[in-house]
Amino acid sequence: MSNPTTWQKSSFSHADGECVELAATDGAIRLRESDDPDTVITTAPRPLGTLIRAIKAGEFDHLGM
Image 1 (cartoon, rainbow, N blue to C red):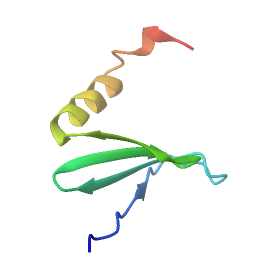
Image 2 (cartoon, helix red, strand yellow):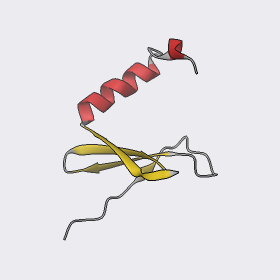
Image 3 (cartoon, one colour):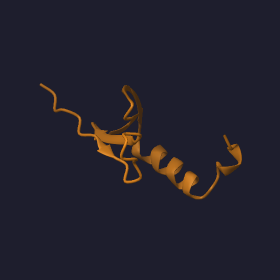
């Protein structure tokens, strides 16, 4: 029997449920959005760290919505 996945919410989450959740399982990092919990993205710690540093550095600010 496998262990249940423990999801952690972002500290920037809204009270109304709009949040990103992360879980570390089997050496991988899983990400999902709370309003669509069945859709999960899986990555490794190093690429996720690279992405987070790039976001913090503003490397994607020019993409605008």
